[in-house]
Length: 391
Image (cartoon, rainbow, N blue to C red; front, side):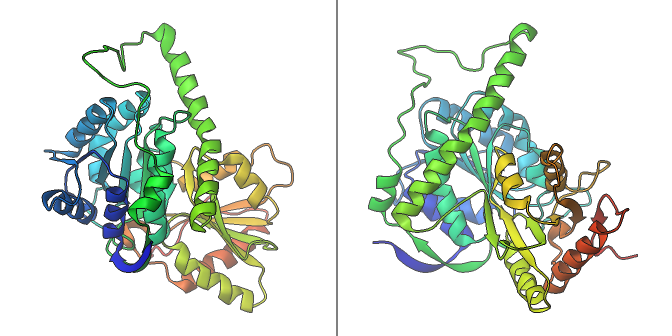
């Protein structure tokens, strides 16, 4: 039977990986990801997890090891954060291009410079086009659940893409929360053993990632894009099965008091918990506001977002990453693109906030939603606003 336990969320992630019965873990320690792989290394050393633990000399090497082990047919896991993701970024494209179902916990950390060990979502946004499935977790239970779900989704023969589960550095990774931990039998019934259709085998030679001249490259990338987008239906199917088995529902958006909202706050990650309090306070003041917490970033759930958010007057997007030299936040820009051919769509107001771990208080979310409504009713509004910047 499952048990409810107070755990550091990094430990909950490690518990999920162990219950998934992984074969290979390859990683390099980096703040604030280190606790995840420390827990796993201890389980391997104590004989509690029958897996090969590879302490690589860098994140680039860690992902290279993951590519080799996954290509050989091993269920494979890694974890990293911020600059570590940047160092392994070359190999992320290789893993997705080879259609290898590696699962990674990405503990979101800001990218330098200036140097910062704290969290925002600039790391994942720097690789948003690398061809991985990307989930955002809001709390410890979602980190645990999504990690197990990621193996099931990535390894499905209709998918075969790597997947990353994003969790906020420190705000989630080092937080202790009650988490329902499934037992081995429950996980085994949901997640079958990995039996890859294609693998590197010296007795049955095959080629992966062969050289592609320009005459073929575009067709290969087009198919990769189409098949990553088609994984959306498998994701929904797996989420539906998870709800039937364990009672916890998942969707591309988690919505809160948004059914009749004229202003919907859209964001991703742990700060959505604070935003819920802001929603309640503004409701008490008579404002019809709601929250939409993004769970699925890639494949981008365009039609779902348009349907879920299209009834609002304003969508107030709070990005925790800045497209430097571009136009505000990545989520806001993709939402604007999603609405580009939709008649009578809401106005999208873009805020960038919470960079490098800066807290956004309840009053901050309230102010941004009130500003968004005011901006949207003006003929002119800023394309984006960096919230809370000192003059």
